[in-house]
Length: 342
Image 1 (cartoon, one colour):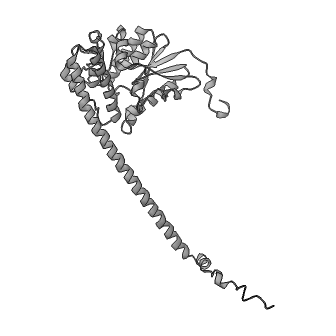
Image 2 (cartoon, one colour):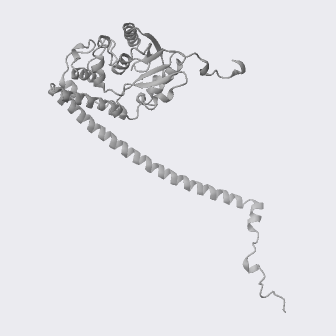
Image 3 (cartoon, rainbow, N blue to C red):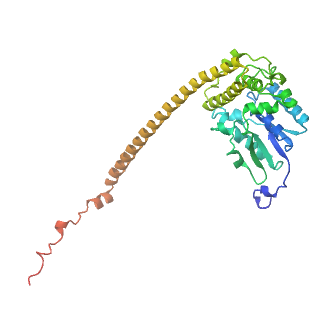
């Protein structure tokens, strides 16, 4: 480019293509199916939502799933590989920044798409600090590409009710993040059981070909919603469980599962309360430490100023100037006594 300047994106040709990030889960299936008439491409990202990105068999499985879904929906598929999660895993929880990883990929393809859809995780009623947000996401848009956060209007139960009417979703739904590649969905982890409860609540569990048909209340009651030490994941999974509880209570035909979900929430909520109390104590300690450090810093500043003054007094010229005799009021001639006689 002449002059070595950066080429403006405004010079690129506009496009009518629309892409949707796709992982095979409930959120991405809901967004892809709901906006099927608008979407031209699906984007599958290896290394983002697959918990074991180095497992080649899992990558092959996910790639096969996405290709088959794209084929059945008549869409094009783009596959992307990234190591951002592996790189930053020790520094920050994926729950806080996964959106920025997706946005960077969307902007990488901004010359191809006029809009890129980000499937929502939560509803408008459950918005808390999360890596993707309906207010934040559109701010990543450029003059070429609109970034749109889609799906906040529906709960996870409502999304499952919607996608259960589409055979392609019931054939390829993939929600599990456990490692065994021989199990498309293990049927035992929190995400599998949560989705099975979604399906049960809308009367569609038997339609799903990728999850077990039997749902044991004992397994549900033993679900630990506090996933590790991450408070945001804890809040997130409890929000999903509460959605399932409301749906099962409204259904009224599964009392054992309803009690199991309620018991799981109660126990996990107690854990969350303890976590929040611990967080408040830690914040109080941090505030006290900051005050102590501030006071210590002030003392150090005063001590430094005193040291500098003492050193300044030892400089001959400064010492001479400071010792010069000042004219005081007593040294000013008294006007009454010095007035000449009349």
